[in-house]
Length: 75
Image 1: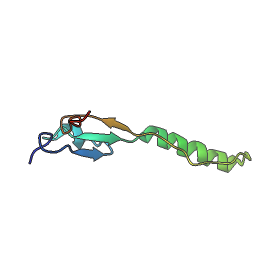
Image 2: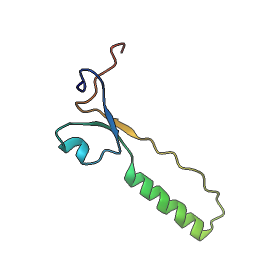
Image 3: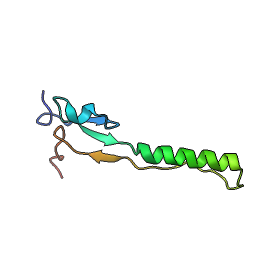
Image 4: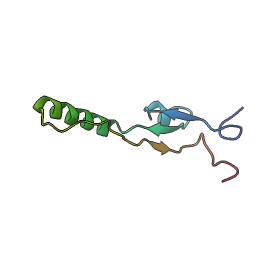
């Protein structure tokens, strides 16, 4: 079997190995900078006890298409 001819292959977290290995791996990229900023802001708000409720943050990942995936034949 080989990607993407026989199957599509996707990694997660967009590490440096995803783009610099012998496979140019498609991957899901997580917004690490935004995650850190959100964590700091949430922690600061709790320390300052501003009275505003904290709620779970929703940060959207993004798909980075490289050479291990192709569009579905039905698309």
